[in-house]
Image (cartoon, rainbow, N blue to C red; front, side):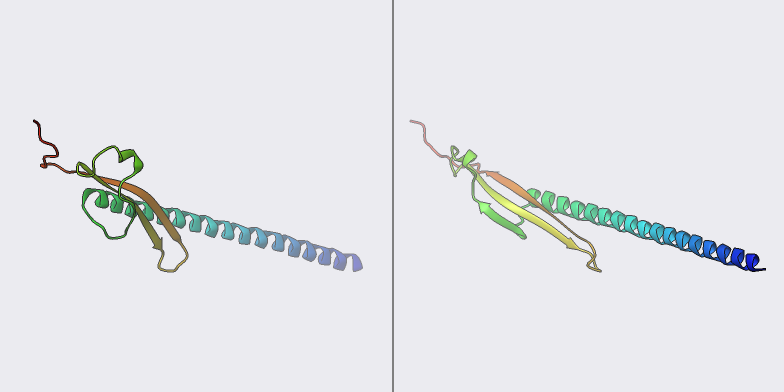
Length: 128
Protein backbone atom coordinates (compact mmCIF):
# COMPACT_ATOMS: atom_id res chain seq x y z
CA UNK A 1 0.00 0.00 0.00
CA UNK A 2 2.76 2.52 0.76
CA UNK A 3 4.23 1.85 -2.69
CA UNK A 4 0.95 2.82 -4.38
CA UNK A 5 0.86 6.12 -2.48
CA UNK A 6 4.46 6.87 -3.40
CA UNK A 7 3.78 6.09 -7.07
CA UNK A 8 0.70 8.34 -7.02
CA UNK A 9 2.64 11.21 -5.43
CA UNK A 10 5.49 10.78 -7.95
CA UNK A 11 3.01 10.79 -10.85
CA UNK A 12 1.32 13.96 -9.52
CA UNK A 13 4.66 15.72 -9.09
CA UNK A 14 5.66 14.68 -12.63
CA UNK A 15 2.35 16.01 -14.01
CA UNK A 16 2.78 19.28 -12.09
CA UNK A 17 6.27 19.77 -13.51
CA UNK A 18 5.04 19.02 -17.04
CA UNK A 19 2.13 21.46 -16.56
CA UNK A 20 4.57 24.20 -15.50
CA UNK A 21 6.82 23.55 -18.50
CA UNK A 22 3.89 23.59 -20.96
CA UNK A 23 2.39 26.76 -19.48
CA UNK A 24 5.78 28.50 -19.61
CA UNK A 25 6.14 27.54 -23.28
CA UNK A 26 2.64 28.86 -24.03
CA UNK A 27 3.42 32.13 -22.25
CA UNK A 28 6.66 32.53 -24.20
CA UNK A 29 4.92 31.84 -27.51
CA UNK A 30 2.20 34.40 -26.72
CA UNK A 31 4.84 36.98 -25.87
CA UNK A 32 6.72 36.31 -29.11
CA UNK A 33 3.49 36.70 -31.11
CA UNK A 34 2.78 40.04 -29.41
CA UNK A 35 6.35 41.15 -30.06
CA UNK A 36 6.11 40.22 -33.74
CA UNK A 37 2.80 42.07 -34.08
CA UNK A 38 4.27 45.18 -32.45
CA UNK A 39 7.24 45.08 -34.82
CA UNK A 40 4.93 44.72 -37.80
CA UNK A 41 2.82 47.67 -36.63
CA UNK A 42 5.98 49.77 -36.19
CA UNK A 43 7.08 48.94 -39.75
CA UNK A 44 3.67 49.89 -41.14
CA UNK A 45 3.77 53.14 -39.17
CA UNK A 46 7.25 53.95 -40.50
CA UNK A 47 6.07 53.19 -44.03
CA UNK A 48 3.15 55.59 -43.55
CA UNK A 49 5.51 58.28 -42.23
CA UNK A 50 7.87 57.80 -45.18
CA UNK A 51 5.00 58.05 -47.67
CA UNK A 52 3.79 61.25 -46.03
CA UNK A 53 7.32 62.67 -46.03
CA UNK A 54 7.87 61.86 -49.70
CA UNK A 55 4.56 63.46 -50.66
CA UNK A 56 5.53 66.58 -48.67
CA UNK A 57 8.92 66.69 -50.39
CA UNK A 58 7.38 66.37 -53.86
CA UNK A 59 4.81 69.05 -53.02
CA UNK A 60 7.54 71.37 -51.75
CA UNK A 61 9.67 70.92 -54.87
CA UNK A 62 6.75 71.43 -57.24
CA UNK A 63 5.35 74.55 -55.60
CA UNK A 64 6.70 77.57 -53.82
CA UNK A 65 5.55 76.36 -50.42
CA UNK A 66 7.51 77.85 -47.54
CA UNK A 67 5.63 76.19 -44.68
CA UNK A 68 7.58 73.71 -42.54
CA UNK A 69 10.80 74.49 -44.41
CA UNK A 70 13.90 75.68 -42.58
CA UNK A 71 16.19 77.75 -44.81
CA UNK A 72 19.84 76.82 -44.38
CA UNK A 73 21.43 78.79 -47.17
CA UNK A 74 20.41 80.97 -50.05
CA UNK A 75 22.81 79.41 -52.53
CA UNK A 76 25.42 76.68 -52.07
CA UNK A 77 29.05 77.35 -52.96
CA UNK A 78 28.77 75.25 -56.11
CA UNK A 79 26.51 77.89 -57.61
CA UNK A 80 28.77 80.82 -56.68
CA UNK A 81 30.03 81.14 -60.25
CA UNK A 82 26.54 81.91 -61.48
CA UNK A 83 25.16 85.35 -61.17
CA UNK A 84 22.42 85.74 -58.59
CA UNK A 85 20.41 87.46 -61.28
CA UNK A 86 20.44 84.26 -63.38
CA UNK A 87 20.10 81.52 -60.78
CA UNK A 88 18.34 81.86 -57.48
CA UNK A 89 18.50 78.88 -55.19
CA UNK A 90 17.62 77.93 -51.64
CA UNK A 91 18.72 75.02 -49.47
CA UNK A 92 15.97 73.79 -47.18
CA UNK A 93 15.57 71.17 -44.50
CA UNK A 94 12.20 69.46 -44.43
CA UNK A 95 11.34 67.24 -41.47
CA UNK A 96 8.34 64.98 -40.97
CA UNK A 97 7.54 63.51 -37.58
CA UNK A 98 4.62 61.24 -36.74
CA UNK A 99 3.42 59.96 -33.39
CA UNK A 100 0.73 57.30 -33.17
CA UNK A 101 -2.53 58.02 -31.38
CA UNK A 102 -1.63 55.80 -28.44
CA UNK A 103 1.97 57.17 -28.37
CA UNK A 104 3.42 53.69 -28.78
CA UNK A 105 5.05 54.35 -32.15
CA UNK A 106 7.01 57.28 -33.49
CA UNK A 107 8.77 57.86 -36.79
CA UNK A 108 10.55 60.77 -38.36
CA UNK A 109 12.33 61.61 -41.58
CA UNK A 110 14.38 64.59 -42.66
CA UNK A 111 15.51 65.70 -46.12
CA UNK A 112 17.72 68.41 -47.53
CA UNK A 113 16.18 70.14 -50.54
CA UNK A 114 17.81 72.35 -53.13
CA UNK A 115 15.34 74.48 -55.01
CA UNK A 116 16.66 76.53 -57.92
CA UNK A 117 14.96 79.15 -60.03
CA UNK A 118 16.19 80.37 -63.39
CA UNK A 119 15.43 84.02 -63.85
CA UNK A 120 14.46 84.67 -67.46
CA UNK A 121 13.44 87.69 -69.45
CA UNK A 122 16.07 90.08 -68.14
CA UNK A 123 18.90 91.53 -70.19
CA UNK A 124 22.07 91.38 -68.14
CA UNK A 125 24.50 92.96 -70.58
CA UNK A 126 24.23 94.94 -73.75
CA UNK A 127 26.23 94.12 -76.84
CA UNK A 128 28.18 96.95 -78.39
